Image 1 (cartoon, rainbow, N blue to C red):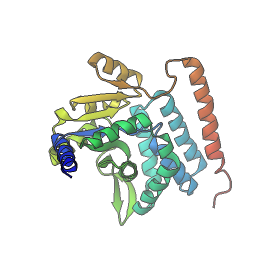
Image 2 (tube, helix red, strand yellow):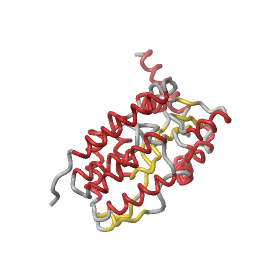
Image 3 (cartoon, rainbow, N blue to C red):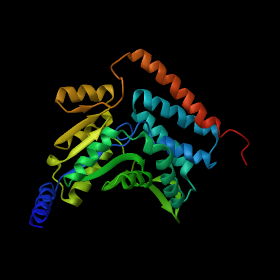
Image 4 (tube, one colour):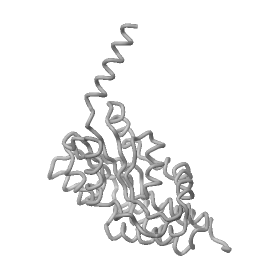
Length: 272
C-alpha cells in the first residue's frame, strides 16, 4: 500500500508540474493524411446534399492538397464552396455526419506518429487541442474520439438550428489560428513559452512562432526551409519521401485519380 500511495503522489506531482502547458495540433496533413473537409463533402454527397459536379470540384481540391500541400487560395475556395453547400443543413445533421466521417474515412488516415506525440503530451498532464479550419463540429468529433482536450475550428452561423451559409468570424486558418490560441491561453492560464504547436504548412508560421516549442510535421517546402533556418524539429511520416521521388509522385497521382474515381463513381446515377 505505501508503494502504491507513493506512486500516486509522484504521478500527481508530474501532472502538476505541467500545469499551464499545452500542445496545439493542426489537423490536415499534420494529424491525418489529406483534408478532412473533403471527406465531409464526400459524405454530404452520399446524402445527396449536392451534385456530382460539385463533388468533383472538392475531389480536385483534395487531390491538389495531397500533392502539393495547402495554399491560401485553395483554403478560401473550399471555404466558399462549403458555406454555400451548408446553408439550410441542421447542426445535428453535421454532428452526426462528423461521427460517420471519422469512423469511415478519417480514423484510418491518422498518422500514428502524430497521434503518439499527442498521447505523450496527455500522459504527462498537458492539455491537447486541435486547431483547424475544419468545421468545429467535425473537429470536436476528432478530438473526442482521440481523447484530446478539445478543438478549435471554423464556426458557422446558425439560426433556428440550421446553418445560414455565413461564418461567425473568419475561417480558422493562418494568422486566425494564432489569435484563437492566444484567447485559449488567456482563458486557461497557459504560458505559451512552455507550449507546443505542430503543423505541416507555412501558413501556420504565426501559430508556430508564438509558442516556445514549434514542431514541423510533413512540411511543405516553404515550412521545411523555415524550420531548417530556425532549427525547429521536423518529423516526416510520408513513407519513401526521399526515395525515387519522380516514381513515387507518378504512383501517387495514379492512385489518387483511381481512388477519387472509385469513390465518386459509386454515387453516379439519377438524382431525385
